[in-house]
Length: 424
Length: 106
Image (cartoon, each protein chain N blue to C red):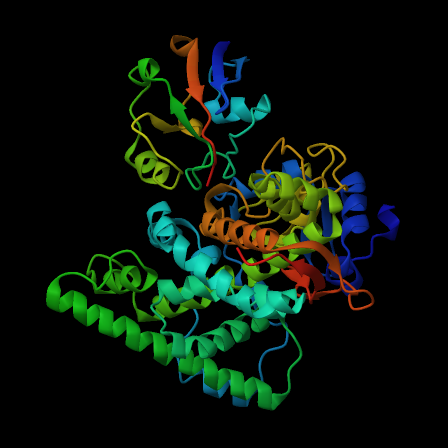
């Protein structure tokens, strides 16, 4: 088996599309595997992925270069980007003191109190989207629902008025597509570069207005949204945060809140529709949606991989790893490790998790937006299952293919049909 | 060994023996206690190991750190006897500890 593992397989589109056999082979033969062709150490067992994620001193998160496209942008495009702020490490790609500061901000902005305040708004947004799509008895779930829904979180955190939302949505999509390293024409690159400059200018203005408010009145217009927290940090002479860092913070936050939630919600819906058992379970007991969502997050692993970098020369499972080496942590594999999850390859909506699934990470970089994401996904599934029934896939319309990067390859689309219930 | 009783929201109780030195969170995960997740592995980065310590045991625990008090606020239905299980290290003096598992983790 080990002989059959080719160096390129982690990047092989067929493996990105369907990683399960590759993952199983790695776990069986070499849970820490040196992929010489790509110069990365591939980690695939639950225990070892957990070990890496819970040891930030040994395994650093300074790996931002892994998110940047392998080919540098053409010079004309780089000239446009040079008009704006340079990119620095922020949020998930930070260590130590910078990470502590950045994390404090998201914990405050994504507090339980804030979630409870925003919950009715999320319900209203879900309802508004479903009002448009449900009566047709059929839906392109990702594009018509899962994609437009999550931007509501950034809208609230950054006080984006409704009329600016379509543009914010476009910006979010551009940032996500750059993480995926998708092929684009020169004209498209230039357009997107100009839009990214516009993104910076737009949010810089908002930040400066908030900073002026703080300087005038001693506090922000709000205290606990991202705009207020970033503005306070910039104004605070004891806080190293500056406009450069704040821009990179927003660049990191958009895909972290949008793309991931869209992909996860689509994955949950896919599993729900494909499982009559799950539909019956939820019809009888709506509170079991939580279990379905958790099992879908484990089984599909919408976030499929994380990167880390060895901070020191170290050994993992007996394999020597030099300082500076990149590690690819295959979350898809860890989540289907059957030494942890009995019958791991099976989707079981009633499953009791013996240990936490690793889709949201673990350790100090555990997703800070997890509670919000889970809440919105559960709320969406709840409304869907209450407002319609007999969900099925549109015959012949679905190939269940995935699109995106090694880290976040989501269902391109799922076309579903259902019977709307009488309006409640 | 330290005997700990976990009471579920529906009243069912399970008493397990956890090694001294282990955290309550690790014990709950080892013994497959439903409703204690501990997603971040005990690094004060989630609040999914939230539990309610029975009042008579609360004063026997070392006080929560400032960091724990901040993070526990991320939990659902926080009460005066709310603690994070990953911050409770079991020792012989806690033999007989009783905690209740919340309805839902965040």
